Image (cartoon, rainbow, N blue to C red):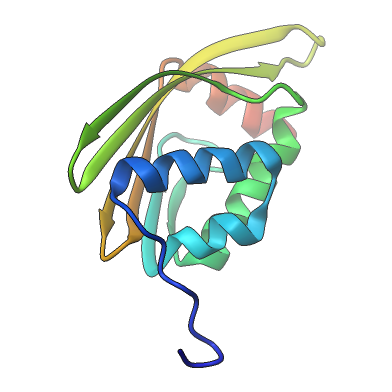
Length: 141
């Protein structure tokens, strides 16, 4: 293995998704980075400063770090369901962000991932209340 080459993650999309969720919960950015293919794409929907298309492990980790710093909640998302579809996997999660007034704002997110060659190559998020998130993140960034 070359000095700049990351080890390949084993397993399929569901295992990679679970490992990614664990890394996020622990804020283990290096572990998260190691799961992503060099050309991995993460699409974040919405009309806010966090939305967009991010390519590559460094861009994806940087966006997760920014997102983690803006939620203001230390409560990790709770996984409600995991779905396995060979090269694809999805997680349904209950999340919480803290509103401007300090109230907790719950929402549900579906995260869909695609894996190839033992790495994540695509990540998409589908929140239950995009308007609330757009307003929250637009106010904070």
